[in-house]
Structures are given as C-alpha cells and as structure tokens.
Image (cartoon, rainbow, N blue to C red; front, side):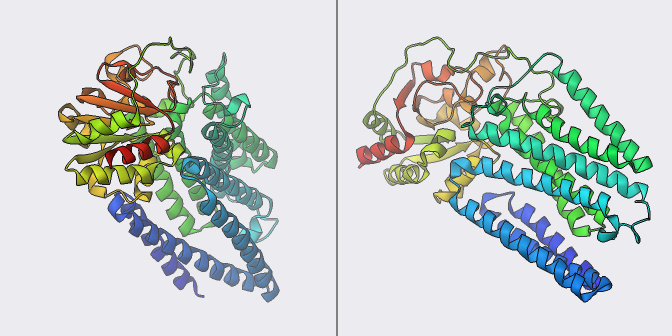
Length: 482
C-alpha cells in the first residue's frame, strides 16, 4: 500500500467522521451519522493495518508479520469486550459506559506516549535509538500524556459517581471539598506544566514520569469537587479531553487520522460542554477547573428537607386527568430510565393520541446522566421525532397546557431555579412545568434529586403526586385508559 493511497484513505475516513458528527446533530439523521462513523472507523483501522505492514516491511518481513499479529490480537480482544459490554449495558448504565470508554482512550494515549519516549525509533520519531527526540515531539508527547492521564483518572471518578453503588467517598454524588483544595490543584497544575517544559527542553525522562504521575493525581482532584448534578457536563468535558489527548499523540506519531479524529472529538466535546453549562447556568471555566468557586454549603443535603404534606393520587386518577385533557406534555427524567418504562410510556401516549389528545415530549438538555440521555431513551421506544421538543422550543407552551406528566425528573423542573435567588440552581433554565393547569408527578418517593434540593413543584395545589415504579405506574395508567 503506497503512502499516497494511505493518505487518501485517511482523508476519506476523516470526511466520514465529519459526516457522522453532522448526522448526530439531529435525531432524524442520527442513524445515518452512526453509519458514517462506523464506515470511517473501519477505513481507519484497515488503513492503519496497511501502514503497519508497510513500515514493518522496511525492517523485515518477519517484523511486519509480528506487528500485524499484535494488532489483530488487540482488535479481537478490544472488539469482543466492547461488543459484549454494548450488548449487555442497560440504558440507565449508558453514562457509566461512556465514562469507561473515555478512561480507556486516555490510558491508551498515556501508554503510547510512554512507548514513544522509551523507544522513539520504533514509532518512526527518530531514525536511530541514539538520536534525541526533537523538542517539538517532546512537547506533543508531554501534552498527550498529561491530558490522557487526566482523562483516565477523572473518568474513573466520574464512573464511580455515576454508578452510585460504591461506598468509597470519592465515588459519592456529593462534592468532596476540603480546605486549600484549589490551592493544591493550582500547585499540582503548575508542577505538571513546569515538568512538561523541563522534559520538552531537556528530554529528562524522570521529569516525564513525574508529570504523568501528577496528571493522574490532578485528574482525581478536579473531578471530586464536582457534584452529581453537574455530571452531564463532566461527561462531555471528559469526552473533549479524550479527543485532545488523541490529537496530541497523533502529532507525535505523524498520524493525520489521529489528529483529525482527535480534534473533531475535542472541539465538539468542548462545544457541547459549553452548551450544557449554559443550560445549567454554570460557569464553563469553573466546571473545567474542578468546581472552582463552589461552596460546600451551597445547598441542603439530600434527605434533610422538612417533611411537608403533598397531594397524592393513584394511577387511575392520573389516567382520568390525562384522558380528559386536550393537551399533554410529558417530561421524562432519570427515573423513567431506571424503570425502563419508555415502551410503556409510548403505549400510553399512543392511546391518548387515539382519543384526540395532543401529546408532546419536553426534553431538558441535562435530563438524565449524560447529554442526550432522554433522546436516546425515547428513540429506543420509537417515539415519533416530531413529538419530541427541546426546552427552548416548548417552554412557551406550558402556560396553555392542560396536563404535564413528569416522570422521574426533578431538578430540571424545580421552580426554585426561577423563584429563589439563593438556591444553588438559581438562574438555571428549567422546563416550566409549574405553569401548566395541572401537574402529575411520578416518583418512587419524596427523595430529592441529584442536586440534593427540595422541589417546590411537588407542593403546589395543582400538583398530584403518584408514587411508585414508573413502569408499573404507567402500565396501570394504560389499563385505566382502556
């Protein structure tokens, strides 16, 4: 395979990745976007195999065969593990899977950087072992390794916070804060930069090893003070980090495919993080710097709210209100994903539509545990795209809506964001469900949401709480509608 052909195939793969991002920008074109992504990755993998054979043949036929053997083993092991995990993962565990994948990308970048520093001639960075690594390559390796290490350890902490099943304090949803935390982060960050520059100008391997170790540490330090409510931003932010790590390594290896793919992932992840921060009224730089400026007493702890009376009803009561409405807006949340109730919800919406009720779905940008979580959930149940609306497109309709059905959502419909300037979520754009004529809220209990805040929506006179598992409650509603 000639270098011209390799360059052309990498270019085609890059075009496929760009088309994939374009397709994923809208639900109606997301399948096509995924197909472009798979095609681009297939092209990139086979082209890389050809490149390995070409480079290996420059040394010996035996070396080319051995190199290809390692690649095949890696593809089989990684491909099998990825296929099994993707097939078995539940929709509620998808954010954890994404965090795990980010951690693997970061760790791969670190391993490649270490290999390049230890044996630069094997990767074509220098002609002979005795030749020094050029300063430009050392800078790229420093950046790629540092960002990769931060991505790995930060993603591990994000994985623990998202799973919620580990008792270790660092994996708890609540922010972990201590005196002098930001000063420590600053000192570690400056040390990494200083060691990186030392490695860049001198090639000192000890400096490189120490900066990688400190990068693993700061990856933990910048994620632990971020609370569970900000996890969607963290997921997209770590996605961006993984892209920049790959791009940095791509420059060192002179691999245009890694550079393009990493840059696309890095820039799109950064843009998405900014959008998510705007949707949550969070400072983008504060989140990126590990919750800088947050306070430990920002809000009450989960479960600490005073018990207040609420109006509750049954599934039959909710079904009666829904069938007698002209317009219904459904607000899905994480509780819907936990109960895997999307298919039952689709059946309920179809029956209401057949009765002449206008049904729409309202999606908040940070509903669930990762960007687009609710969109994926509804798409799995084949909810028509034309019924699904983003927050800015549907908020104006709540005031004219007969019934709003909130399923497992909490913080994204909390009126405190608009009415209480002292609330930790003050200023955060919300779905204005409180403006509807009647509100039905399904929750397992009165426990607070991920932000640990009480929700005034639940105590309004117009609100009826229906307690229970979302799937069971919705299935009972379907029977009552029949």
